[in-house]
Image (cartoon, rainbow, N blue to C red; front, side, top):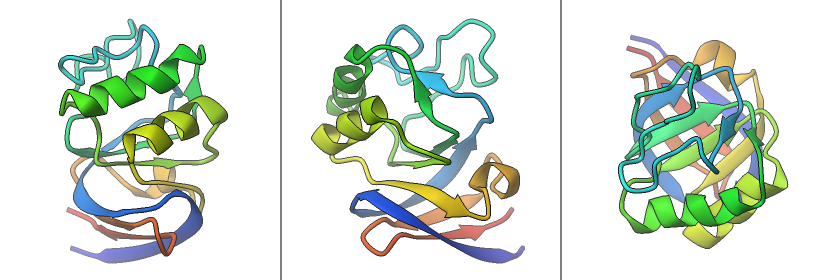
Amino acid sequence: MSTLTFTGKRIVGGKVEGEALVCSEPICFLGGVDVNTGMITEKGHQLEGKSMKDKILVFPTGKGSTGGSYLIYETASNGMGPLAMLNRKVEVVTAIGCIIAEIPVIDRIEPDPIDVIKDGDYVIVDADQGTITVIQK
């Protein structure tokens, strides 16, 4: 096992830790996520059929309609949301959704977390400080 530490820009503060769920594709929260189960439902998406519930969700950016902000909030309110989100570059829809849902978010992480973090790695997120510690499995 090895431990890596990254830094990035705090978007939404908070401290959480848990297992990583990683993808290299943007995620659409409007129509691409079931708010009642936390499952990714977008057809053909590399995370299709996987749940983001209680995961550190690592993905490049969000995509889609502004309704996605509310759906992030609704997913979290249902207890089915991720613990935190790590993005290459967070866009407004995801940022607003995480602000109202109080989900920690860090972006502009060096090195690129999608290249280094793998599914199942244990991740400690301190978004207040903009730091991520990864314990690789």
